[in-house]
Amino acid sequence: MEAAVGMGTTPVTVITGFLGSGKSTLLEHVLRERHGRRIAVIQNELGAGGSLPEQVSMLNETGDRYDEWVELPNGCLCCAVRDKLTIALERLMERRGQFEYILIETTGVANPGALASTFWLDDALESPLRLDGIVTLVDAANVLRHVSARSVETGQVNEVVQQIAYADRLILNKCDLAPSAERLDEVEQTVRTINGLAPIVRAEYAHVDLDAILGTSSFQTQRALDVGASLARARAGVLSGECLPCAPMEPHGTARDDAGSGDAHSIRVQTCSLRTDGRLALEPFKAWLCDLLWERPTRPVFRAKGLLHFAGEDVRPHALQAVHDVWDLKPCGPALVAADSGGDDGGQRGGAAPTNWIVIIGARVDADALGREFRGCVAREGNGGAGEDGAEEGGLGGAHDVDVT
Ligand SMILES: Nc1nc2c(ncn2[C@@H]2O[C@H](COP(=O)(O)OP(=O)(O)OP(=O)(O)O)[C@@H](O)[C@H]2O)c(=O)[nH]1
Image 1 (cartoon, helix red, strand yellow):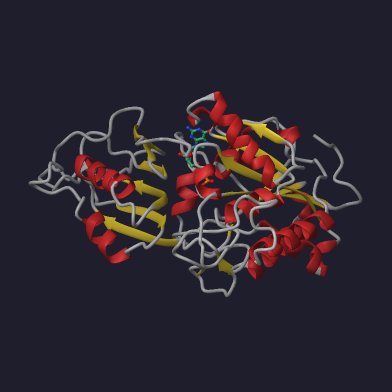
Image 2: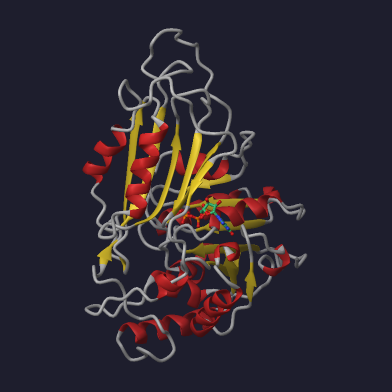
């Protein structure tokens, strides 16, 4: 890794990539490695706006947490909360001596070009900060379907393509989920046609050599402007079918991001955050989840995360992670400490009823219906919840038709 910060500027690396591609996994890898740097992290997640994303992504099995964590409010960094990003960066700069590097994790639908411009458009940030590079995670298991999603009416370039096009470094992640080496080569070739310049590193669980992504001084303003111009021409149809094999998007058209900022995201991504108190019945919850992820093609779910509590022996909170049709459920953090009620508590073994959270990101999300269904999973007499065993040790998971097409 490059040793110098250079002329007193603090380098910033932007970590981007579509929903579930492995950004938080990379962040955890970076923060756990012995790299000798004090790193401040700015995290921006779509969804709850409360503490759920932080709990899910940053609590490990022993309940460790990281310091120097700045969480931005709900909304996307590239548009709705861009001003908040500027303020967060300015605040961090007041504590400059306490860290040497800044990492920004964007939402899965951010446009890194809009984000990068923050660094040359804001005078207050331009001199103390230096955008070192944009690192884009590419989900080897899902990227082909993402880049080929089409919208004949709009001809829009989608977020996945933008994120790949603007990258200074590309991580082809989730290589373990590719069905064959040939398919992986095909995925890499497709990525290469969108961005022919950025080095590509293949990875599993975002395990990469940090020298390949940090301190690379790889960001160039002129290249970012050129990429922006190419994408704009592709959007206008000029480059359709030439440089970017991607231009069109899904038939459900252009959508404004949830926060209604005025910056259009091309994928109609909607987010809903659900919560319910009590302990959930494991089997009904699993059945609902599988139905949600696998059986509703007209309302696809791209991503779900949750912090859940089940009835049964294992009273530890469980983190749910789902990306398209693959999901897993693992214990995270210590069990809630509460006095055992001793009697019939409707499956609330472990004492006071805990709160379950789930964030669902998808298309045509019907929050009311999902809320009812989620609440229906609370353990009670008759749905197998009260008194049944909880999640198995080591976690549960599911995969359905995991294909790269
Ligand atoms: N099999 C497999 N799973 C992975 C890999 N990398 C990450 N995951 C899993 O994929 C899920 C999503 O990973 P995250 O790191 O949370 O993805 P993200 O890009 O931060 O997600 P969003 O912030 O919601 O966009 C988690 O369950 C990870 O454990 C990988 O290389 N292989």
